[in-house]
Length: 164
Image 1 (tube, rainbow, N blue to C red):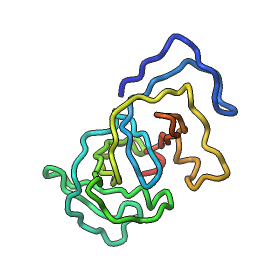
Image 2 (cartoon, one colour; image 1 turned 180 degrees about the vertical axis):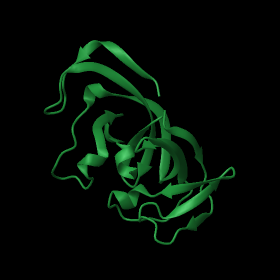
Image 3 (cartoon, rainbow, N blue to C red; image 1 turned 135 degrees about the vertical axis):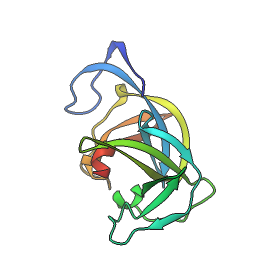
């Protein structure tokens, strides 16, 4: 991930957030249902078409299966389950985003099931807002912050907390 510190300070947009300089985060925009998530590109290893899965008995509900990615067996995470969203059938837009995230100090490679992958872009912390406690079906500890992209709110998730 490339983070470029800007020289001009931006206003604090979220309640309780300290004023700071604007930071640009390079992210991959991923769709889950009607929600758009911004996954930091330094985590992303590749994007692949859906592959056959092997279900794992007794696995955590949001890590239900394993997949084979070029000879490497990795867990497949379904963030819809983790966020309490309804499960849907795969479509022509469904992709698996292979990421590497640090969990309890160790790098872990896994696949994220995505309904759609949009583009790599930058989001700014200038529009950063804290996760509202009401009216949200996500657990606030799973969200780093919410920001704007193309006039829509996008969620920047805390992947190590979600998957840990």
